[in-house]
Structure formats: structure tokens, C-alpha cells
Length: 412
Image 1: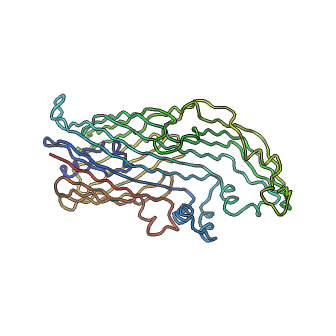
Image 2: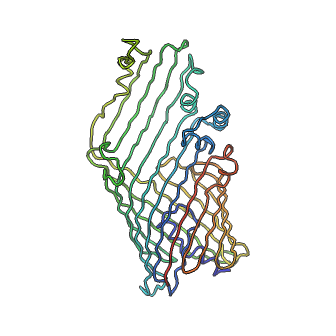
Image 3: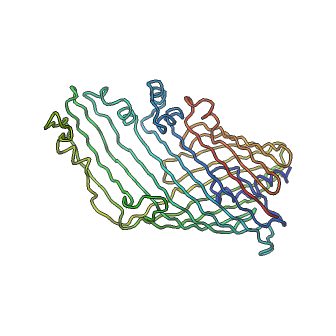
């Protein structure tokens, strides 16, 4: 049993370094391990309020009917979150025969394409955005506390790792970034709907809009990844592993072309001025609203942002009949709630592992993951999984989704 558990846990540094963002990616180094190369891709999105059905319709541009909106509205609270990631990359791991008398040691390099977004929004903001403001006549809709954070970057990484420890150092190329925070924001609709008053105090920072294509360089940064597996002896004499992973502890400094916006004011909007009924191009909005839409940056200058770091702590008993582990994960600076989870692993002989996970928190609520890991012939290995199978069984009732795939080839 301990050998089987080692197969799943002994090389968990690959979780961080391959950035599959799930706890199931395994490699097994031994004295005959020479090198491994592979590729991976994954995406994940979740919301405490929006259902998968709603997210899918919105993302694909499909019609969102009243039933879909009502299911979301029944889940809304005063403060709600949505967040997601998309990643892809290539990695190479080279075994080291012996260094400091540690045989299971390897160095690695990786190149990754990364994207992350998260937002916090109020109940009123959702209702006005998707239902309009008709129900708010004579009332004020409160949008305060709105936050939006988006970042896209490339990561170039190298380091060393083993079955007991790992360290990776990264250089980030910042491609795009947007950061919007509205400390206060409200929309008053007059009783007869003939005018609106929008009050806001916000700050917004955008990376240089002149360079947005893939690989564009609007910032440079660095990061650190750490991994440790610590054997433990429990009070009953049984063995266990405590696994700690800290990934993406870093920052990106955006260049001098970064735009900074800051405003604290009220905009009054009372309709359109039509100068020529037969030429809509000659139609304009009243000045105050038009000025709000054509805002100029207050200044330009360099700005530094943190990359959302992730701390993952796992506890895995050894020598038990059923292999399982318990963990808790947290992402900093990303509106992410602590995610607690448990996993059970089942082995189908020496080649296949089926892993089931149940957890609560993160960007969604309840999550039920399922992953298949297969060691194929000639050193090939494949992993395929879903972060939340309920997203594909009951999309109208679940709020998180994601899939991941990795392929690798090991030479011995």
C-alpha cells in the first residue's frame, strides 16, 4: 500500500511546476529516471451566484431566458464573486543521478501561458445589468464594492525538485492587466424614469492599450514556487505525510505606459439630444454622461501588481486500507474563499488511478471532481479530469466548472 501511495504523492511538486492547478498530476522518479517531457492545458471558472447554465449562455452569446436569470437571482447575496483561470504549457524534467546523496532529484524547465480573472459584484449590479433599471424607479441601486481584476502573462520557469522538496524560480512577461475598484457606486432612477444619477468613487489601472497581442510585453516580474513533503508519525503510531505547496509568490511591474484613472463624482443623465431625426449619426448624449464615457487617464506611470499566489496544505495518512487525503487551499489577492477538500484514490492495477474529490469554497460552492490518471505503454502517461462533474450533469444547479488534460513521456 505504501508503494501505491508513493506513486500518487511522492512527486507532487509537479502539481506546482506543471501548473495543472489540480492535486492529481503525478510523476514517479526513481534510480532509472532519466527525463520526462510533457504538455498540459486547463481551464476553470466558478461563481458563488451564477450557475454554469448562465455562464455558458453568457460566454457563447446565447439567449438568456427569465428562468436562467431567476435561478441566479435566487442565489444572489449582497456580495458575490466570480473567478477563473486558463493555462497551457510545456515542461521538461531531467533526472539527476546523485546530488548530496539524494537519488530522487531532478531539475526542470517550463514555459506557460497564463490568464486569470476575478470580480466581486452586488445583487443590484446583476439585476440592473441583466434586468434593466425599471424596477428601481424612485430607488437607488447600490454597486459599491465592485472589483474587477484581469491579468494575462507568460511564465518562464526553472528549478529543482524531488519527492521531498522543490523550488522553482520564474520570470513573468506581463501581457495585459486591468484593475478596477469602485469603493462607492450607486445609480438613482427617478420615479418617472426621465433621468438617472450615477454616483461613483473609483480607481482603474490599465496596462498599455497599444500593445495587446499574444506575447506583448507591458511588464516584467518574477516569482517563487515552493514545495515540501514532511513525513509524520501520528499518536497511534501510523505514518502520514504533510504536504505544503506555495505557488506564484511573485509580482509584475507594469511599464510607464500604464494608464491610471481616478474619479469621485456624480454624473447626471437625462436622455439623448437628437439634432436631426433623419441622421442618427448626429445624435449625441448630454455632456455630463458623454464625458464619463470618454474619460481620459489622470496619469501614466509604472505600477506593480501581485500575481495571485496559492497556498495548498494537504494531509495524507499512509498504511491505511483506503488511500485518501484532506486539504485546504487559498489564493491571495483574488476574492477567493478558502477551499476545503477531500480526495479518495482507487487503483485499477499498476497503470490506472481514479481519483474523486469533494470540496467547498473557492470561487464556487460545492465542487465534485473526478480524475483519471493512466500510465500507458512506452513511458506515456495521461491525465484527464473535471473540476466539477455536476457542471455537466446539472448545469442549472451548479456554479463551478473546469477540465484539465496533461500528456507526458518518460524515458528511463
